[in-house]
Length: 125
Image (tube, rainbow, N blue to C red):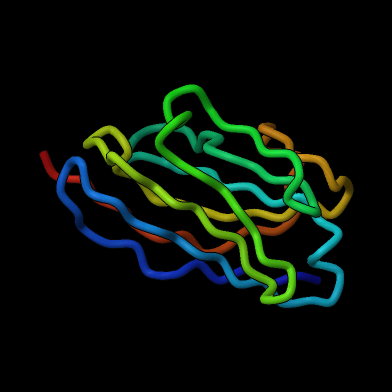
């Protein structure tokens, strides 16, 4: 069993940066691929970024490429999402997730077995 706890998000202005973190419990965390998803009001939860078990492979949705960076520190059981040049359309609840069945990053929501509680990020124009 893995428990995931996201850091607090916040209210920022367009163009600002924000870093989210997700702390994981469980000794097998380091073998799991990790992902970030987001859900805007009235919309489906969508993939944002994912990282392989060792951090060697990352993938991003097109809308955040070049602006967001996912990383992980297995010694600290933590995955990060650095978000730069934020836009109002990035406003959403952000969730981190763990895939226990694969060490490779997936963009498919159903691949993930464990989810955090979510944290609100609001970007004002």
